[in-house]
Image (cartoon, rainbow, N blue to C red):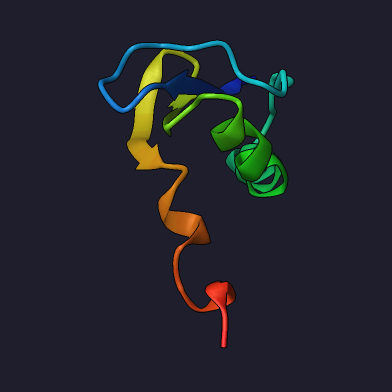
Length: 76
């Protein structure tokens, strides 16, 4: 069975330890759901972007953790 994992990086691509330790996910959806629940803590903890892997294959990334908090949530 495949394992889905995130790599946490600074903006320059340097790998960093995440503020919230992820589990090893069995589906891409589980990995994405977890990221959706923890991205703010991860961003505040020093990760700027993430890359998703299935075993050793890069699926997508790097994806910024900062873009998600920009937008209409900031106020009326």
